[in-house]
Length: 192
Ligand SMILES: [Zn+2]
Image 1 (cartoon, rainbow, N blue to C red):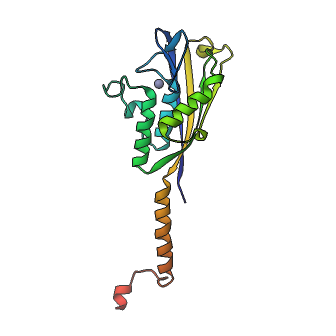
Image 2 (spheres, rainbow, N blue to C red):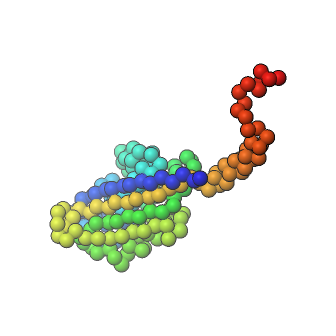
């Protein structure tokens, strides 16, 4: 049976003037953007963390240190492809992702499907496998005061199917041989 693993990611970035606002790889027309290395794409960061967590591979900072010249200015959605490769190397594929962005302004309802589509494209999975939801904070706390944006994500991954098929074929062969060898192997040498 295929092994499934679940992962959770959460991220917060400060809203500042003089930066582009990028969420889920989509550039949004807004007077403020998210502080942080590269584009501060809080949604993508939460998704990356959830995928790494599902595979028990640590967090985004450990895997893609912002101090590294390789990752410091990389567009955040490019990390999705790199995570997918990391997962594939240890035999896992992505089943589905569910994410929520908490943002007072701008309202994201009209672009949440667009963000989901970009994320799916970067991960080379179907758009139906990615859900992006958006909510506001009712004026409460730092999000309600438009000082920051938060995102959380849950991902489900599973063992890559071709490995499962190979295991099944091995199990079938072993099962067939088992009919002729029900006894434990211990002691066979002594009998002969
Ligand atoms: Zn982040």
